[in-house]
Length: 170
Image (tube, rainbow, N blue to C red; front, side, top):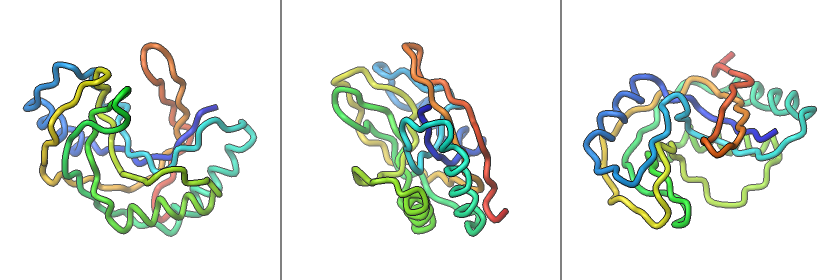
């Protein structure tokens, strides 16, 4: 099963992002439903079912010492490879967010294959399309919990199922 660990996007942050999106020329964008918006911390990829308990144990270990924190969304832009660009909200790499990312990577022994740029994927741009970077806010995003999410890809887009929720400090 295809898994990742993420921070959910609070309703107040979703609403602020929706207001920004209404002001942008989004002709070549297929927006992602807000229910699927998340801030990915660790992409785990394909995992055997029997690994889920180890992943949850690592999340609990890291989540137990984490405290709720705020990070900031600072811009909306085209993000990713030009052949498959996304519309993304860029999240400032605040220290608590980057520490959480590093702790999860360490506990899970996941190999880091590329630089981590915190972002929220808001939609899919048509191949070769772009939009100008748009400074926003900053828009606060309060992080209070970790989610373990299963992702099933289809021609209609990804389907997400939350497998586990870990509250910070619990």
